[in-house]
Amino acid sequence: MQSTSESVAVQAVLNRLVDAWGRQDAEMYGELFTEDATYVTYVGTFYQGRHDIVASHRALFDGFAKGTRLADETLAIRFPAPGVAVVSGRGDTYKGSRPAKLSKIQTYTLVLGADGEWRIAAFQNTRRRPLTEAVSHRLAPGLVPVAERR
Image (cartoon, rainbow, N blue to C red; front, side, top):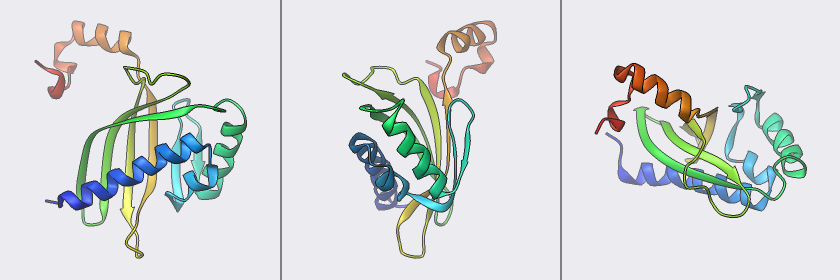
């Protein structure tokens, strides 16, 4: 079992990610990833390496995502091995008020570097389909995640 301080350190990385997005700072955003990180967007685009992640976010912040903020909600942090953290959460980009329901489900894999810093080694972002999810859960109740069975 990992300590609370490790969970706090991992969450701090995600908080810095949100801050970097809010500043629209692609370099600051990219520094939170390992040199060889992978990044999969909700539309299925695959980026390989920090340089690719920074360049794509520079373009995003100058275009589609200009002036947006990032909402992030951690659902779970687990440590499957020493120096490895897997974070499941929800997220979204927005302008104006933060959305009440976040439309994407995300997985971060973080690793503890030799320098003692946690960095994101892999990121997967998937758009949620609430209507499809609700219909499938109604037709096949066994598909409802345990955490949502109440």
